[in-house]
Image 1 (cartoon, rainbow, N blue to C red):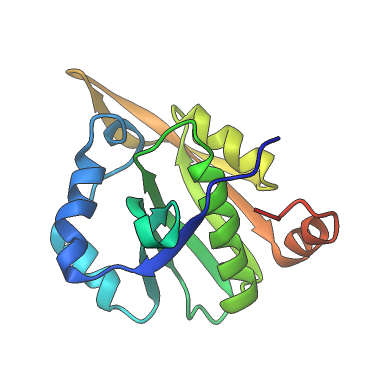
Image 2 (tube, rainbow, N blue to C red):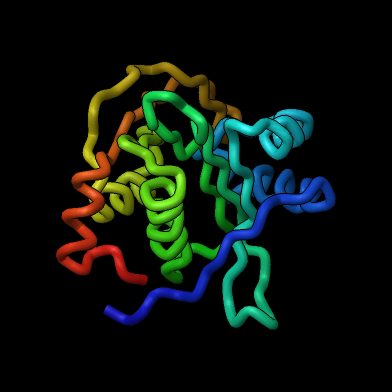
Length: 180
């Protein structure tokens, strides 16, 4: 496998929110997320229990914004950190995998998470495959829990809850499965 692209995270600034909203509203991303209002993003930037990051990729001097990531539960007394959202524009170039590895490292090594979890829409099979290949375990499904409207068709989709525990992450590190 070729090496993953260089990605880094920087804290989202209020001046980045036009970009964040545009990535969320992009037709390639919209079916897979439940978009937030701008004020919800502002709250995530300001709230101490959350971390809101802009994902940049490429050489540091020429890095381009590729998307954003939101973590919640960063001060959770049970050390259960949620990957609330990871929305990227480049598809099929390894940026998502590189981001996921970086954010797992942050969750487990900096935030000292015991459990790192997420939910993903059932129709987002690409993301599910990524999470499974990166060591996340399916815990269960919230059946038909989100309303979905795609090209005028209304319906419901299920959310799949997945997680990774700190000991599972450490085992992956020991087997060199977490290097970027």
